[in-house]
Image (cartoon, rainbow, N blue to C red; front, top):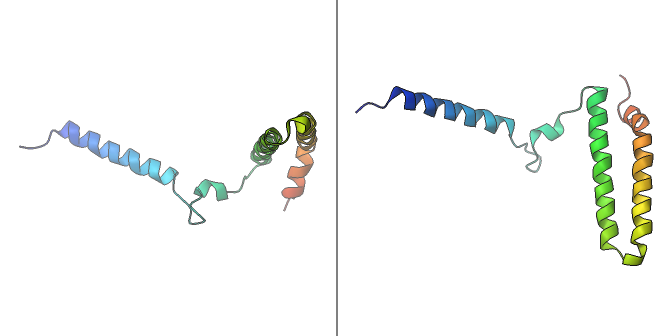
Length: 103
């Protein structure tokens, strides 16, 4: 019995979709990191978006460290973490420019 042509088409499309998804999530040889982690941000807007993400992640890490510390120091630790975050965000454009000088 021959396979239904519709089923063959669906199987072919499913395989193509899987291959496309696999290519988009390809792993780099550098410790299993996704390849996209090693693609440089091309525009100042992309660079700023990445920098803001990094500053936000640093705040989250600092706050987590504060929560693990002694309760009596937690409030001051959180205030300091927030202050550093605000300073970094205020200076983000200068940080971006220093990290990515025009060539």
